[in-house]
Image (cartoon, rainbow, N blue to C red):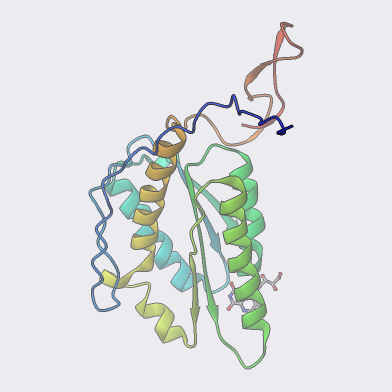
Length: 215
Ligand code: DLZ
């Protein structure tokens, strides 16, 4: 007798929503073009380090100004600060746990020294950031410059080559892609901890209560 064939009753996956293809014309290794972006209503998180703060602050300034130019309000730029690049993944995770940011831009600068410290931090931090975005589904950028000299870092945080500008645009593009594909509405509300969570039923059909936690 032939074994019964289980027929899935699960609804077919929703077709992928299409987005205008990104313009990706490489300019001699000096960055990429972006499609026209409108970031109105998005909320973007920025996490910066105090290590190499002179360069990191330029990256942050470039990112902030770009976000504002794209239509994001000051209040929709959420900022955390941490000591060094090693701390970026955990702080970014705290920010992701709020579920109130559409993308996160961690920013740090690692300068290669004479020891293996640089490689340990660079590899662990970048792996942590990748893991974070894949496990949460929230875009988390690779905003760590790994440079051999401070001059290299300065160059990448200045003028037309300010990576903070590109990171901001990438964050907006990825946030839009996520919201489009997941059918999410734009994020709103505060970032904090308390009783500001969603109304949920405490039991099926039971009275609703507000959840405690990040909101
Ligand atoms: C310890 C250290 C060193 C040597 N260099 C850097 C650096 O170039 N950039 C950076 O962001 N952080 C550096 N740190 C600090 C570590 O990231 C981390 O803050 C400490 O090891 C404490 O966990």
